[in-house]
Amino acid sequence: MIKLIAQRLAASALILLGVAAITFVLLYLLPADPAVNLAGRSATAQTVANIRHELGLDQPLLTQFLHYLGNLAQGNLGRSYTQKTEVVTLILARLPATLILMAAGIAVEVALGLIFGVIAALNRGGPVDRLVMAACFVGVSAPQFVVALLLLYVFALMLGWFPMSGFGTAAHVVLPALTLGVLGAGWYARMVRSAMIDVLNQDYVRTARAKGISERRVIFRHALPNALLPIIAMIGIDIGQFMSGVVVVEAVYGWPGIGQLVWQAIQQVDLPIIMGVTLVSAFAIVAGNLIADLVAPLIDPRIRAR
Amino acid sequence: MRVLREIARRPTALFGLAVVLTVVVAAIGAPLLAPFSPSEQLFDGLTLEGAPIPPDATYLLGTDALGRDLLSRLLYGARTSLIIGLVANGTAVAIGLFVGMTAGYLRGAVGNAMMRFTDLMMAFPALLLAIVLAAIFRPSLWIVAMVIAMVNWVQVARIVYTETRGLVERDFILAERSLGAGHGRIIFLHILPHLMPTAIVWGTLGIATTVLLEATLSFLGIGVQPPEPSWGNIIFESQSFFSGAPWLVFFPGIAILLTALSFNLVGDALRDIFDPTQRGRM
Image 1 (cartoon, rainbow over the protein chains, first blue to last red):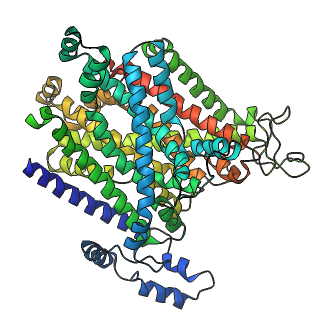
Image 2 (spheres, helix red, strand yellow; image 1 turned 90 degrees about the vertical axis):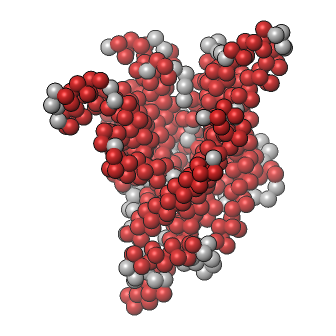
Image 3 (tube, helix red, strand yellow; image 1 turned 90 degrees about the horizontal axis):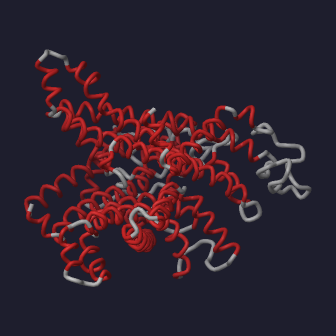
């Protein structure tokens, strides 16, 4: 087990290094020049050259990358070009807002997914099942920004129940979390449904029923816990997806998280911030997958035995 | 034929196919079907106060903030969505097939290296990568298509890899090999045909993802650039008017949703038809 964990950790570190290298090359080879952007339109060639030198952009790519890695090893993501602040500080300041949104979004997703997945599985093949599955398809096919705008229109503009945008109170988190959660719930519901159907066909469920245990107890005590395993794996994967998927939702709702931070940075060609957020997101994806793999055997002894 | 008959037996798939065909007809026939030019700022296309006109008898879906007919723009927008859907997703499936098949057939060091690279790509925050690339390159239809292809091929590669590895172990491949068939012959004549169902299913499902991604990039203003109409950039342009003119968000939104939904429904049905053991799965 420990050997396995060590192997996975080493592989994860290598993957992150690869992500860093690819992002670095992509960003620094792209046509947009941050120095020109910083210097402004009326700057002379000399000013641009000075800025480029100051930022170290006139060095060979490999030198720049090794320098970046050296800093990274010390937990330093460099300084923002436009905000003149450490990228680590900027990201840490924005991370809590994104984490709150992520937690709320995942909570909505999992709650809706569990409820509708179980309902569909118990009515397998019937009209309720078909209806739920059709709704799931609509959910996973809906464009996030359209749902965000529609929720805003109905619940903020027409009904006035929730604020249009911003951050601070619990009311602010409702619409963004619903936007994220309603769409993702479709995947969860489908997964819960198929896991539940598998479990309900198992011998031990039949035994439980044969013993005369109430149907409610069979479902919630015997069947559901075993159907939860894929859900836990999915939450792990979701954590990573959320970190990069919040850009749109944060843009629509003016949510001050890392999505908004990177969106502003993209427009200003602030490469260190883009690099930093990409790395943090990649880290979240790798960590989420790792957690999913490592938690599964803790919960399910059958996997441990393998 | 069998596939069509199977689809006809499923109401949801039939609905999906009908919508897909409608979108195709709209895209191809846009010049004939559109009541106005998509880019013309119509003389009476705004109210006296200069606001967009709500849906009425002349402008069936209303006009936008510049006095252009929304229905005409949506019809031409279908072209954008389909072109990007086909080009971007076609490229993604082709890359995925190539990488997955090569890695699965060769295995060894080369195959391993290729699959480790897909692992790496899986760890990339895909949407973020697409946004960064689209924003920093000069955006155009083709750049958007290439950016989407770059982030979408990975999943196909992994599935094709798993299938190819299974195929390579089968007896008929061994038989071919002992008869002296070359690698090219085995790959193209004996492995590729077995991968076609997967390619078709992902070719269909992937269009839904692609349409959504294009709309998202265009909505952020870094996808297809106005005045060229795309469903995403119609919403991008109309965002600030949406309290007074919600139809400008509503109709393109419905178009995106219905198109993505239909490709998903058809793709899901195709997967069921080709592989009944996967029925009702993810």
